[in-house]
Length: 212
Image (cartoon, rainbow, N blue to C red; front, side):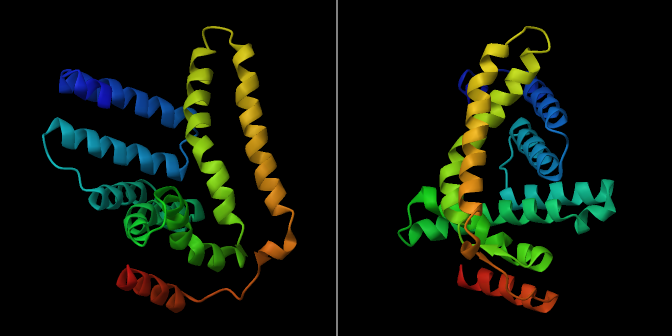
């Protein structure tokens, strides 16, 4: 998008090309809750640029969530949907404040989604893994690389044989899997507190908003 904007490309053409890419990527990625949410938010942002309007992140998140629930009312009970909305909200809401406390932006970005999703994980799985932060620190930088590289690899390989490029992709995936399995192998890092009730969840989020 930034390339098109810097080149002063026609906004309609830019909107069309990026929307096609957005939709194609979403389909290839399996149309999961997080993918659909990100796709809709991306489209809302593109429309804002097309209409010369300021894009508000929270309105985009709310609109994408509303659209998903209109298409599938049961999505609100889907744990994947709950986690992606909470993690995205936490990333943008908590990261600036954590960084202002002196925490490095990289660690703030890793910690913010964890803070926002802990209650949902506790409520559904009765588990907290205190290794989640160091795992995120090691894994997050490579997720975007694997996602983008994997998308173009799958897309282009439909027309041209690129099997030699699969080796670095598989290597990165194996490294990430190894990191997750390594930290997951320490049972003492996993805590199993009692599942909180809905009232406690509400209190937790109210206190978070108040503190941050």
